[in-house]
Length: 207
Image (cartoon, rainbow, N blue to C red; front, side, top):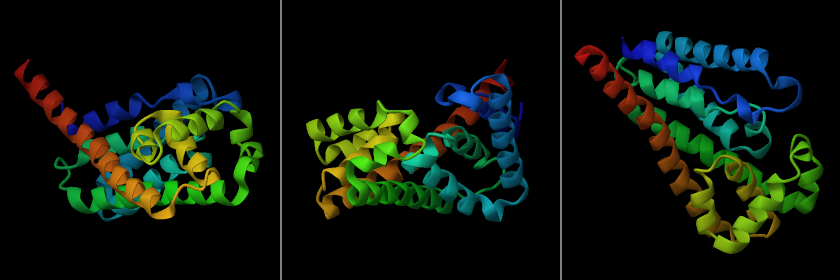
C-alpha cells in the first residue's frame, strides 16, 4: 500500500459527528469525505499549492464560525501523509498551517472583543449555545494558557479565542500563546499524518 493511498484512508475518517441539521448523516459525510479526497488529489498533482491550501484549511479550522461547519483536520492529516511520498517540503507547509491557524484565532479574538456576548447570536454559534459558555469557563479557569491548551481540543478551539476577546485578555500575551500554539498544532497534525503513513506502509510491507 502506497503512502498516497494512505492519505485517502485518512480522508475516510472525516468526523461526521461534528455536523448538525441538514449536513448530518451518510450523504453529508460522503460529501466531506469526497472533499478531503479531492484536496489530497489536488495537492498531490499541484504541489506548489500545498502551502496556500494548508493555510486556508488551518484558518477555517481555527475560525470559530467556519470550524463548526467544515472541520479541516482530516484533510490536514491527509496532506501530511503526502509529505515525503510526493516530495512536498514540510517546512513551508508547516509555517503556512501555523500562520493560518493563528490568523483564525486572531479573527475570532477580534469578534469576541468587538461584539462581546452578541457573538452567541451569530450563526452558526446560535445553533450551539453550549459552546461559548464552555470556552468562557475554560478561559476564566486557565487564563492565557487556555489559548495554548484549547487549540488541541475540538469545540474549545472554536470558543476559547472568542471568550478571550470577550474578557479582553491582554493582547500580546494572547498573541504569543496564539502563534506558539498554532505552530505546534500545525506540526502535530502534519507530522501525525506523515509518521502514521510511514508506520502503516512499513507494516503493510512487513505483513
